[in-house]
Amino acid sequence: MNYKIKLTDGNTQIIQIFATTFKKLNVWKLAFENGTEIMLYKVGTEWLQRTEDYLEQCYVLSIGSYIDKMELELEN
Image (tube, rainbow, N blue to C red; front, side, top):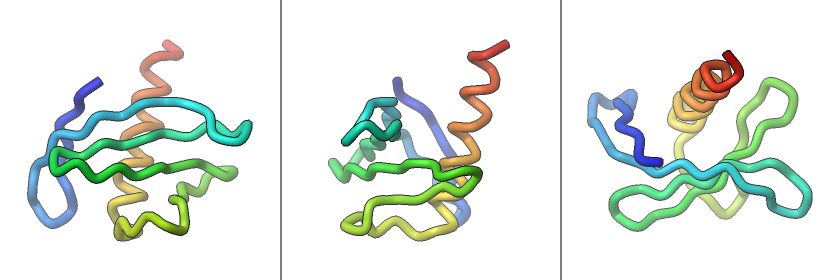
């Protein structure tokens, strides 16, 4: 699905978020408009990214928080 998010620097960007699995781990794959793909995953309450991805931590936390809200809405 496509989602419009406002980043902490004030820019708005459309990203695609896909829930999938990678090596038996639940992950969320993000596809940005410029073709960049990032993989996020959650350990406990902390959002992390693959070591080969270079998204700033503030964006990882912001997008992770957005995914958490999406999941809560799906549960209700």
